[in-house]
Length: 302
Image 1 (tube, rainbow, N blue to C red):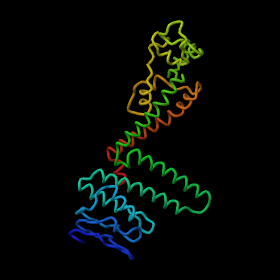
Image 2: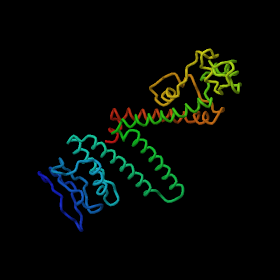
Image 3: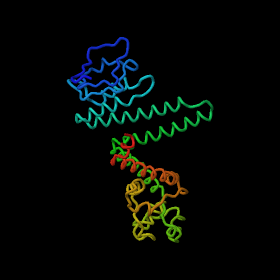
Image 4: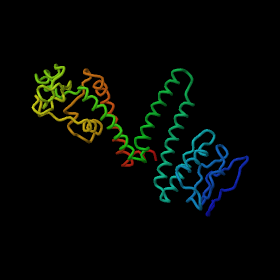
């Protein structure tokens, strides 16, 4: 145990191992270029209270350092990451500390997949099972990583939700323009007014002069227009439909009023299938964001 600063600068280790296991120092004063790499340094259990002098505290620099020394005999050591995050947080560098903890979780997940694959038993079936489990674990890890930063970056869920809304917006707008939306009501689509509209190849838009050649093939557009058979029907908005579809806490009335038809065109077919994935993704990302904000994910990991 060293109560004062531990200085590691202008030192080279041409051979041997720098073993700092369970060592405790007051402050760490180092230059990253002089740390040994890989199996030449063992930091598991090494603790320090602060960085002193001009020792770097930037998360990117420190993560570069840890990635050089975070394995011992092929096994990942999470303790140096936890220690670094604790010191950075105590010094007020909370954002940097969260980046370190996210890097720790990503490396831990990678080590688990590596161990699972190395421990597989022989046989095609066993290899296939291990590969399938690893693939599922990798997908879930990416969801946790980009969806909520493993619980340390809950605002990432907002960005993912906005991206999902954007995708849905494009799909909804193209589907509407194509004429592949229908009223989301069994009664409405069986009324004579709607069946007459869907049987018409081209009709003059509402409000155009009788002699106009400007026509539309979108029966939903006519159905929701003024003086049309369904004049009281909900007006369509691609942006509102997208938000209504993806964000589970919203109810803007769009998905309950309109539904894509998979039989009228390609865009309608795409949205008809994609809406299930988009809605499920919205629920999942929202749940991850809520879990990250309340600390549930972090408690589960710590």
